Length: 107
Image 1 (cartoon, rainbow, N blue to C red):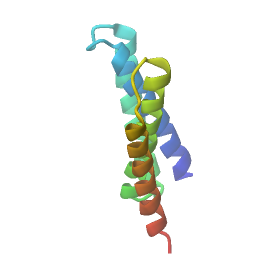
Image 2: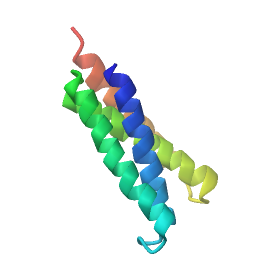
Image 3: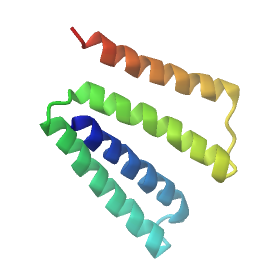
Image 4: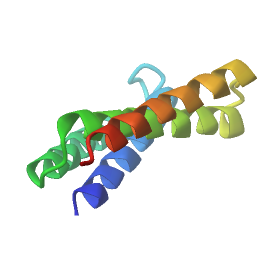
């Protein structure tokens, strides 16, 4: 069950961060509302994952790794941002590090 909460937190954080780009420095109302609501919801959902037993290091690591990968893909696919092979390799290393963190905690 904590993984469902974490997945929701990641989805809201990605929505909020993407909306941040469209808020143009909080000068546009609707995207700015998505930013605030998305981050508030993401932190609430993260707290629920932690309350339900997910270790903090694993939760934050998975959140960061998946969030980085999704935002880089969204930027490259939909926002015209560049994504080099070196950046892709860096994202893969972050994900590998999170996997090592998760697998290292299993007994």
